[in-house]
Figure (spheres, chains in turn yellow, green):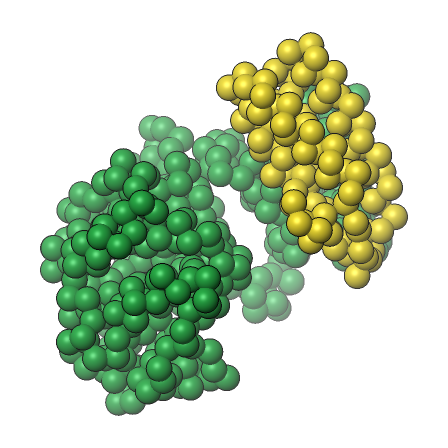
Length: 101
Length: 418
């Protein structure tokens, strides 16, 4: 991914919500790993679906995109796709840069 | 204003609550977590709220079931239902179950949320005083009174210059459909209206995967309507988002557009109004054209004087700008302008005014494609030739050109779809 794809702009009046949002995303990443290890595809589908819903709402389009990959992967039971999606999510969360305007 | 926010996602509850309080500082917003609390029981003071925002997936509950249950109560306030994007069946079911409005959750912006709550909670006075609110209310009440055999008109989802657009479905299933009701000022032109009815009767008979399916059209108490398929994938404008597409994708969609033009031209119909908003995507990613320029021409018939340019001329052919007789090459030109936009993310011609853009179509040599797109230069040039005699003559000729020059690049989906 190019550097630009890690940049997110969030409205200034939402700044105080972002720490909770990011904390929940990291918890989500942990939950995804646990669910994959347990081959709990229903849990993975639900988590992916939630990411899809919440990402765009806050301006984190990439979270929604990865959420869709995970939701689709869980539906088809594609472990490789799920693993790749979770790795991508980890990479994204560790590098995302947030600007407030 | 009191709002009950029912969603299993803490972040969405926080966000929506912030949006509401940002607009109505005195609003009381109660966040209701269905993961921790059951469906509000009989003792819950539902009637003390002005509006409920209810998500369709509640973690351990089904939002539609909650909606049905809440709506059975006499004290239930208006409900804004949040649905998933690309799955309008949920919206149809929600509206049939009594939701007062719906929004696609993934596309819910601050503005959309505020507009919806404002509309749902407006007092009778506000509905009269505010022109935009009054217009919306008029649209809603029109949809509620129009009777179409076998079709349930559910909710107004958009307004354009020529028609109001409604989410609808058949009475015996939940398949989402669109109903368009022409504006009265357009219906008043009886001669042009007759042509509209005649041409849509033809469009209705076109069996093409690349043309929107028209399920019926008619007139109910002087309200002229069309019933057509619902496109869950949105339009090309949304897909582009002001950015270029990968060339292979652009070429694939362009090829599908050529199949569509081939199909309608064969029936003697010109589209006349190709633009990104009229290229729609189904859930499976396939493309179809909608909104033939028929209604637009009705609008134009009495109001356009010589030399006057109607609407946006971004995709108009030179002969359209000049008001000359049109043939199928006008659609080929417009398709070329669309291809340029898909490849570059930019308009072929820009200008401060509609007239300036129109003049560019007549007189200005199209800007060359960037170097990395040079292989498509000849294609675009021949599509947007100002002299129509030098342009591709028809869609088949374009498809042949594409096959010869770019066979390796667009071999898959279009072949399967056609």
